[in-house]
Length: 245
Image (cartoon, one colour):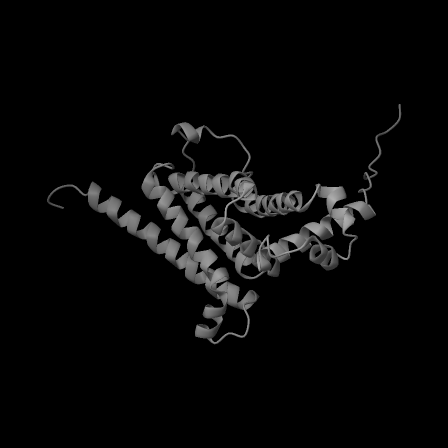
């Protein structure tokens, strides 16, 4: 009887076609975000990717298909990053019907803090996030099918998952209006430091926003989360206080 081997299955190296496809997607993400879809030519994209202009039609069927591929790249990237902090976004949940199984509140609160820290580390400090945010802002201003892909793949499931964690942390219903708005404020304060990057650097006297600055931003953002949670706890304690105490 032969013994099982411990040999690892070799990873398939990216083929030249795969590399060209990836380069075109990254070039499109960058240029569509910077110049807009209509303001960017396929020739510019091919030049940025150092690829033959005909490869756009070959791999994506045209410029529109390339925009959708850029949207899918955003979905894959953010799903990976979000999954590290708040779990697989594509896992089914019965919360859509209004019910969720309550977990450990302290663990849920720790997960919220971790999620915000990871959000800051990626959105605020990484150059790639700048290209993603620019692309998404363009789509939010002039929605296309690409925004549908991003919303369905990232926005809705990430927000829904954070709402579930908020419910576990506070006892407030995940799909209540108050919870959904609160989660939007948590995400929004992080995103501002990317879209308002230039204003932040000028006001703070920073030449750049790197790891050190991102750490300071994360501290401010998580302090805000701590204050919100403390206010919830105080309100709950006051509500439950016996008369005459």
